[in-house]
Amino acid sequence: MEGVSSDQTTTSGAGRTTDSDTGRTTDSGAGAQDSPFRHEQTARDEAPQFVLPLVVRIERTDPPARTDALETAARAVLVILSDERSLGDGEWAQAMRDWQDARIRKVVRRARGAEWRRAEALPGITVTGSSAEVRVFPPVPLDGWPKDLARLQVSGTDLDDPEPPVDADLSAPVLWLSPDLDMSAGKAMAQAGHGAQLAWWELSDEERTAWREAGFPLAVRTPDPARWAQLTTSGLPLVRDAGFTEIAPGLTVAVDGYERVGALPKRVRRPAAWR
Image (tube, rainbow, N blue to C red; front, side, top):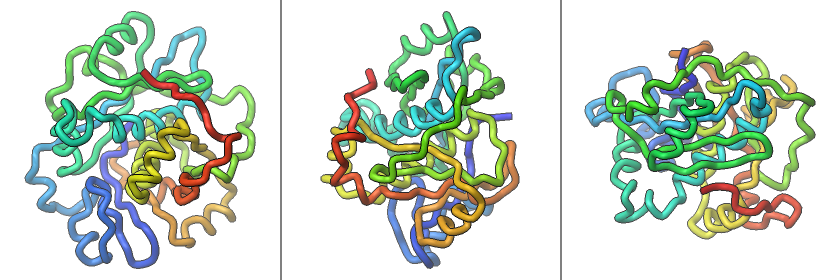
């Protein structure tokens, strides 16, 4: 099974749909008709299809903690979205635009040892968490993966937290995962990446700069069912999976607190942790 969320519908507020591959927020009629993650055929299917590759380092003797891997993957998506090579006339900018003009896909694969060293030699960005390392690469065609990435396994991304995660600091964005779902770490990493991307699209240029300069503080947590019900009816941006891999169709992530990035307290700021 793929650690990928290939088809989502994302919503932002009552009666509004966020177009997941451009970040535009439109009235539900037009946006829903051309969502990048609808089951139905749309104009986006006529465009060349791309995927954003992410590789998580999982060594046999020292695997990362699950929550840290999810948070690091979410930051990796934000890092590449904000990187100067992805913007304007940057070397990755056309690939990023092509990816966002079609249906957005993210695939998470795993690597260790020599596999990881080969992956790090390819153009991309490695983002480091407390225990996790995730490398994100510019989008590639669905059928055009570099061989050193194509040979990596998608399965085997089952990770655990040695201890229960501490409560999320609500002064920074929180990506809330549905408590009704049982996802592999790879699948959940892709979902967290989608949630982080939605938060990014909701922000002004000034807010994006402030978030990046603070090191992209965020948390990924799973609420209790009552809290989840409240989150999904509060007008927050939501990620809805089409159910093509691992899980049935339905809501997967609620994006909370993105509006707080312009005034992040010092305690949640972290030094740059990517290269």
